[in-house]
Length: 448
Image (cartoon, rainbow, N blue to C red; front, side):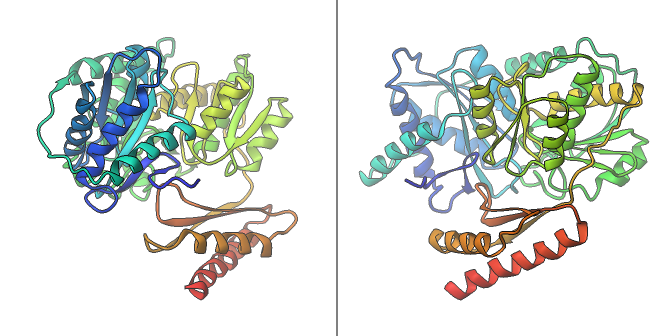
């Protein structure tokens, strides 16, 4: 059964519009609480935090009302990055951790990411279970009156503990006052990132750390890199690190304008670990991971697996295979040695450390990637999913060619179809991407 509310990374959409109304979020709180009653032992205690969107505090209050109707108490972490919720939920054994965020989307969108008591994002089956409760409650036509919830503020405590945790992951590294630029996307990391990197020895220049509720990810952050080259140049930095609004993914740029996406970051960390003779049991990527990374790992005799797009699917595969490293091209980097969630700050510290190892050993710093292009075909929000499925299937069948890796999929976070083309020749990739994109657009229009 297709899920109605959950995408590849929690629930996400424009707050205030169907289905994400005020009443929906109260019902979501009730549904989450009811779904937890099947557990043998629950403490009826929930941790909740958010990014910097103007709607986040309202959503926290609404979800909390729903939780309170079932007798749950709520600790409010305040504005924190998503991985802080994963970390603290596990550390303090909460029944569930909730992050109110729409990740890299602009401020109008918001939503919820859900973590279990072990700090892992809940499974697809658990999401479906919560959806079944939501649908049942909605069918009852009950409207809940909004009120102020009784929430305990633990924001200072969790911020302090999480900063210490991040710093401790780099306790043995020596960075010697290297200059870096941080683009914080006016998001969750705006309070803590500078302190963390300065404490471990960096000379830090900060950009986009003044959130106003509406400027999160707005022409900044990991999905918008146009301003980063000039910022790096003006700061005289060696690297620029750009995170997304909720702080769980990272993109890096060097002083020459070279972009390191998730595949490049994984390559740097893994290559450095090989030089340092550190054990790597295996690596998980996604269907979007560049073939060059797979080929590199094969040559190093390191097992590699592909998962569906979505860091929770990467994590599930890592747990299944007992691998400690994984990630997505988009910049979610998972290192289970430290944390159960993608974390832009920890990934940044790891990248900077191992890139230094590569340079000191005169090793190749760059993954020689196959030309790859991702094209987004946007569509109206309420376009019938069957039309999307038809367009994707017919395009995949029509453009099936040897020597070309073609992935066409519906995005789980935006109203668009993502087309990924990868082959050995850059011009071919460019032209083929245009051809496939036109086919998909024409097919959608012809069916309507």
